[in-house]
Length: 285
Image (cartoon, rainbow, N blue to C red):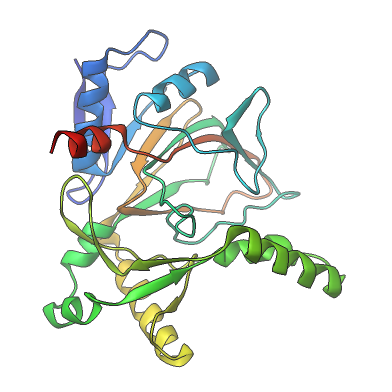
């Protein structure tokens, strides 16, 4: 039987009592899912999960994403993204973001395992998009209710323009925009399972607000980014090798703090794109 310890009132719970070296019963997966819906981020210290068990654990919650369009994968496991950074390969996502919101379907969850973390630094922060919505003034909630945001590859543009050959950079950028495309999502959404409203905005991938001029959109984006950057909505995790984190990517943002360079930080991540239990619930309804 698992037990939990809440990390903050708004977000985060540490889970105890899971042995990843053994098959995990389906009822335990169901318990983990319920804690995830309530706490948004769950963490297990010293999980020491193998790549095979990492895959099996993720599959218990839904379908796995295709290999990442930019990052390498763990050898022999194409669905496990290898996030390996040091002074030679600095991180490119040191900003608040929700993973891959520009894709046709916003991923359900991510499961991250720490393989080699620096002795200091390299924490990850998460923020609740429920709490961000709840704190909005009622007038602002009404103003945002029918607005939509354009999501695209955003900060990933830096990965395609890091070259002195400007012509090549433009070609790579045009190709990447065509390949990854855009998506349009409401700024205020409802969670498909809990029904709670949340603010579906992140500064990394939201590039414009539909119907606004660039100046108007930038002003609103700045307001939302500042509004969502409140410690009361956040939690912070100090990693140790072997730790595991899982978060509901639909209603959270996260920030991998890039304060550890030139030291090395190596993480493994799986993205789950469909919530299997949501599908079952919808079919039953």
